[in-house]
Image (cartoon, rainbow, N blue to C red):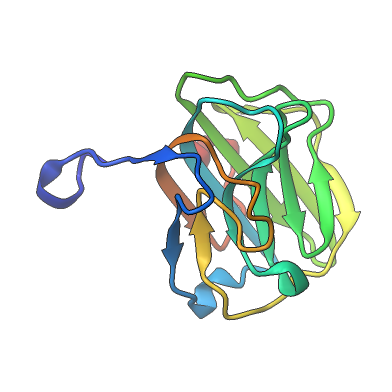
Length: 172
């Protein structure tokens, strides 16, 4: 960001290959099972075909979370453990432009998940029961350990991870 090292505005770009991602070593703080918020700026260059993962934690048998874009309809989705929360009535993420996306969740084990695109709630919150798996895996930005074909294509900037549900006024 603009306040980063030596005031350079760095962005995670050139994403799109299976090996193009950033791993953040596991910390207890990334086991956000009861509630949380992810937000980031994204510049997807494609959203069709495979699902696109923006941030995730966990391997196949022990997935904690995965925030991504559906390769079928370009809408946001959030996975907690083995349960998908799909933004089926929401807006598709625009391609070839910067967009601010966010997801919030709360209410373990009966979660309420809310999606946001460019400061606007994207349709109604989604409800469902899920198990947030606790593990020591790394947090991966731009890809998924569990689903190697979910590589994000484009650029990601200013990823924020919160251990509370942020309101729309706090997100953007």
